[in-house]
Image 1 (cartoon, one colour):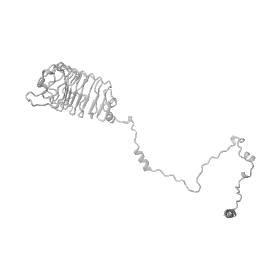
Image 2 (tube, rainbow, N blue to C red):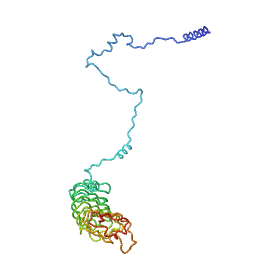
Image 3 (cartoon, helix red, strand yellow):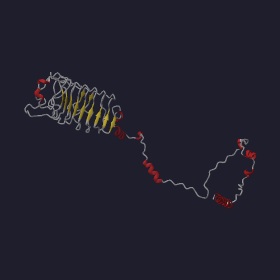
Image 4 (cartoon, one colour):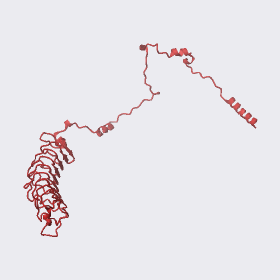
Length: 319
């Protein structure tokens, strides 16, 4: 069997060799193929050629055939649309005076825009810690004004004139010692007034719309607050009068008052009807939960009937 298999394999190999095509020599028809090695060295030797005789041919390969390269023509409409969609830069020198004033607010006495001197964000103006000695002119839409840690000495009646949207004024830590009587009265939307850490001796008439008043650490003394100054402030919730050398509690207090801070004054006495209604023993004053009288020479234990209507006892000395 092995001999038979070898014979069959031999016949197959012989048949394949007979039927295979014959190889013919290939002629590449080039002059360099008949050259010797020495001729090739001379053919590609560039060392002996002078530089000034060397010629370089620079050409651009163009596509074969007679086809023309077509370049898309510019579209005028698209170019105009691109120009319109690109935002234009506005030259500051080309702005007219009314437009400039509207963007940066009115000018100060030094002919300087308020919103460039201070920081204006929407309807809020921040002028904190700018060494101002007067309140700058404010944009008419100002609702919240902060000018803390400056050197303002006086509030004039025209400082907030025509600011019908003004809701909060914060002049903490200035040198204010004088306030015109009409400085705040004509502000119909004023809700919060903060004048703490100044030198105020006399409180002007305030709008009845106030809900928050902080005049702590001033010099109001015995006559600094008018009689019934807070009577008609029905929405007043917080009244802070600490460190003012007061010798009495300003009465009457609004019914909706929640917090009354009178620490570190010179209050000596309190009446039974200071907080409660002595004619109505069932009267309860639910809103007033935070009364601070600590730091005063008053002895709260001498008038226990004054606190019967309160949800919490005042904080202060009982001795």
